[in-house]
Length: 208
Length: 211
Image (cartoon, rainbow over all chains, first blue to last red; front, top):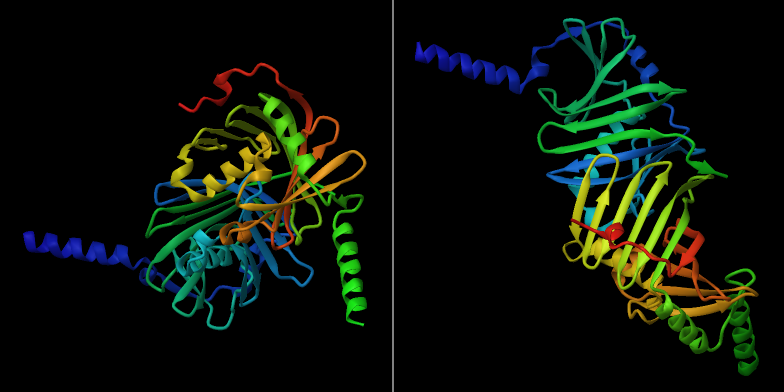
């Protein structure tokens, strides 16, 4: 009996540690997920960051440039800039990063997190759909990383986004309440360490 | 020939310096300004003001404008309360910093955080008039009809990565700082304009309390 219990626990642990492996392939329309791609003409967000017990707040700007690349700039409320990143398809540029943040793992994590939300580098080659109950997982492999856009079965609404391996997620993101293609709320939560980013859009911030 | 070239170079350099800030010309001797500015700052015990902060990013055509209230009490207490378009409170008192954003309160020891320690020192120096004698910067002073512009250029490597220079705009009548401009190496800048300024009014210590 004790042996069976141990086996059950192991199986349970195994199934938890590789949730994507339990999903089945689906032949739904791959292109529908593109309709959820946000269109950041220019948006300012009140930003809250919690990372390993530390809290940071500030302002984050996401803007599509004339060449269709996307710039993301994060500063504190008093104007002190933390980073300025550029995303153009597969190309990623660090225009500026504050020296204490200038560490490869930090930049890599932020790049991948925003890449998931921006949806501007979805390589359809190699992409596939998985399903589980009423959810569809639109999956875009990028090397060892996999970007998952999880919708309802009819692909009418996006439930959440995830990034991880082909076995399990390492982070989850949501983008909600779209207004002219721009989400009002964005949330990013990592599952393997304590790191959260919360964005709430600020309207009427600018003067010409 | 050499002399002519040298003279031409000096003239061009002079023109370049004078053209750096429209309407301002470089003061060849800033000692008189420094003396009067320091004297006026020493007489200032408190400041109560509204402020308008403008963040200019080279990649953005619009300015990000935020507004709020500012209080200063000698020797080294500052309270900045942003009210539009977001709520954010920062109190700097001695070596302590208190921050309250829309979600959390944070108490930081300025010494434990180099970034805050630097910002703390710069802000205090700008407000209490000691900026021109801060060894972290070299200063040049320009003047226009109604204002002085004190240009502070960072000397140390760390500050140079943060700021190209910090400019203080000082009113010629009362030597009060009316604007602080923080220019970043990237071309982005942040400007804080102080308006509706009241000097030496009674301010409760409770405004600057960090419990």
